[in-house]
Length: 305
Image (tube, rainbow, N blue to C red; front, side, top):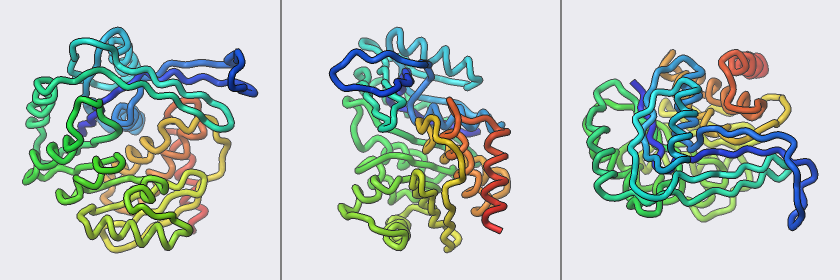
């Protein structure tokens, strides 16, 4: 079983606006509501790829009710913990040329509720996978990802962490199976400016030396690079297609990689599946379906031959 954890889920309000003008009244040309948060996006994509999973996290208020309903609507099994007071956040995603986002703060999560989640995670068994993804509520200690990996240390669990800053760095001593920084996040960790692929590979290798087994670096329109646990480096250019909605593309990459690894235990296949899932979602209105992912996967394999 795969478990995903989203500490700060959102109701994503995705709107398209032609010729957005700051300080003016702008009219939308389309709008959708989706269950959001990085872990939930991973859960949705895993479901699209036929991988059964359970989404864990915290919800609050009327927006939390809608997140739970929307997740169920797209087929995701969830065990969200309801917190008292406030509302789950609404994240506004402006589909303009710049792709502006305005993300809410989220509700207060008490220590008691965090402990309840940790006890739920005690159910994880050998052979399961755990995905920790995204930001955390301000009330949650920033050591929480590290605390979770420490708690399950000793179990044979595939752990995946998609986070930034200290949330990411602090887990490395527990040897996560996969971390997925993008180029900007890699620069943030090492306080440097990356200028070429050799810089990316070098710093991905440094993260491996610190404990990560596989480092998947997403490069947006430039593709992705994987420094794998088998000692090899895998590189893929971005597949050809029209960018429609970049929201959730990185989360789709995580889900695609995990699905591909669970399917064949082959790093190249997992990498291609990750790139295909991420790109297919970027070419879609919402997170891509399996047929679209397989079509992009075939394109990647053909171009690599």
